[in-house]
Amino acid sequence: MSDAAFALAFYACAGLAVVPAVAILLSSEIVRQAFWLLGTLTGVAGLYLLLGADFLGLTQVLVYIGGILILMLFGVMLTQRAKGTYGQAPTTRAWPAGLIGIGATLMLALAAVAATAGSGRLAPTLPATTGTTRGIGEALMSGYILPFEMVSIVLLAALVGAAFLARRSTEVAAPPSLTAGAATAGPATPPAPAGPAGGQP
Image 1 (cartoon, rainbow, N blue to C red):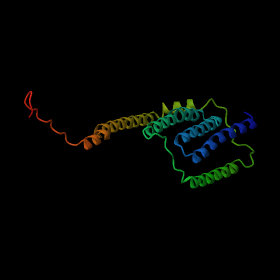
Image 2: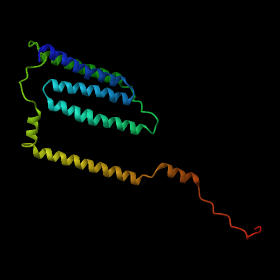
Image 3: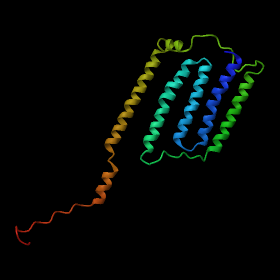
Image 4: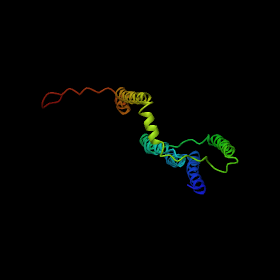
């Protein structure tokens, strides 16, 4: 890839990552913030792929965009359906967050300029490789097989514990409609005794 094409792709991915992030800070609706987050994660995935980290780029797309973001959207929509609205996120701290973001951006820009001063390149020349996925897979299945399996056991234990706690809370908690109805109904009145057949009591 030529320097001009690399610079164009880099600025396109950087803009795709930064502009939706600013829109997240300015938006007050949670669903719109989640959709803006989609653009930010896509831009970061593009930066990973552009720098040759194919494993991180594909993981960004499959795990964060395809899994966590969709889970966030379903969670927001399901939990806010009972209220009739999709919620409003308070923006009272937008200005401090904006100032912190601008300061961090300036610091990163100065660090990038200092790192590339005199070279005239946005990034150092990367060696021609076949990708990082094979190397990471071989490392996980050889020297790091024990930590890999331990992490899977911890995640399985967390899933089992979450399912147990959710089931226990639903069994213990009584529906509020039933308890409210029983409290307002009052004691049941006994039926009046029936009089003699065919006459008045």
